[in-house]
Image (tube, rainbow, N blue to C red; front, side, top):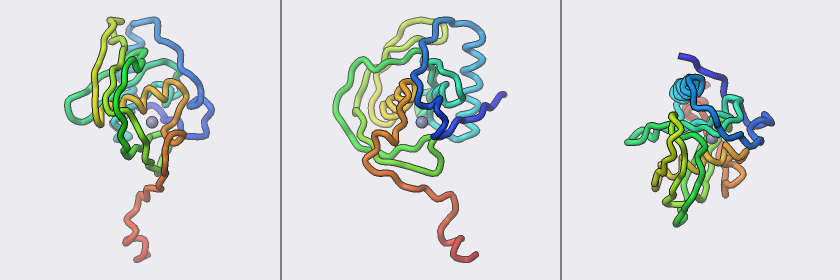
Length: 162
Ligand code: ZN
């Protein structure tokens, strides 16, 4: 297991566009494993390669329901509806924000063997996918957020007792 360091807001790499993945080899699979390891340690539901400092169009997702997958060169090809929801990001620690996202989407991507596929998603999964695809284009959710909130790690009542 190899947990990689997550880059945080302010690191210029997070603002760069990732490059398409052209080689579907063992090193891609190793990287995917590292991304999953890192995502689980950080307790995330999605992670893009750029968040560990690699400008490759590659994301991993685990919505903690039905979907656990790696998407190579993901691209939004269709979208419908709009809904507001809360988001956080491992690269923007201790914050959350209200963001409008498409309700249902279609994403074209390649699997780890390079096979072209299409995924349809709605609700929370659609939100996670849009958030991660934005990362591959150098966009952070806070750019789109209508409101941002500080998320305190400690219980405020405990702090009063100090
Ligand atoms: Zn993020």
